[in-house]
Image 1 (cartoon, rainbow over the protein chains, first blue to last red):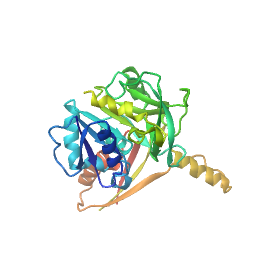
Image 2 (tube, each protein chain N blue to C red):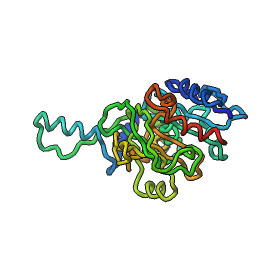
Image 3 (cartoon, rainbow over the protein chains, first blue to last red):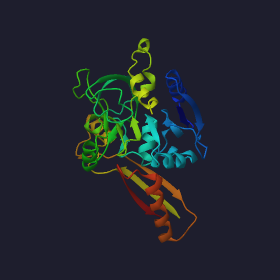
Image 4 (cartoon, helix red, strand yellow):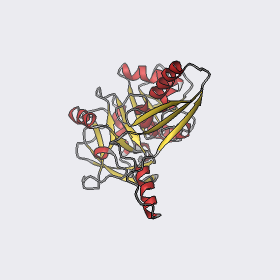
Length: 224
Length: 79
């Protein structure tokens, strides 16, 4: 299992992500955004969190034009698995690999805390180790995590089981920290090979640090 | 030639910054403001003097990069 982790100027979660996947037994490579091709043995691309290009213009708007993104699009369109975490999710929506967009949090505040999420659909490789209705405790840390999609888009997401995770309280009741449409925290594409979420599973790998609920999420990819 | 591009959230997309500014204006007792929308302005200096070409080029720039048309509208003014 080889995980290729993208690094743009301003990415800051690439080493956490690397540590998390290596702890699970994967081999990893951090790939600078100027690369025009991907390592040929890549099984999963992770677009890691951070503030690519300082979030100038819009979060992810400039990173999506980095040279490596052409290869990422081709990889994804060919069925390759791609996971975008936080800023990575923003990059993937800007690149058109995932539907919708991420807006400024409704409160206008940067939010950094643990949050509970409900697993909505586990019929995909990312969440197959979890059950629908499971509650996981995963840190969030974002300023622009307010997911927007129009009504028709939301219907499509719902009918194709593309809503992966929702922000809830510990009982699974909706609790929306940032104003996201339908309290959505993570989605996938129709083909279920491109995944994006604002919370950080790579920061929830050790119970002594608050939660190890990220392990089951990332482990899903290691089964492939 | 200069192109002035105004980008703002689409009608129907909640503008939290606009709401906060509206609230602040109320707090300062500025009355008579019905709505506030906060956008951004991008000013481009262009080589061309051909208005038609400029409009075509800048429209493409907006579609590709300057605006995210999922949530934003843009207006272009050439001066």
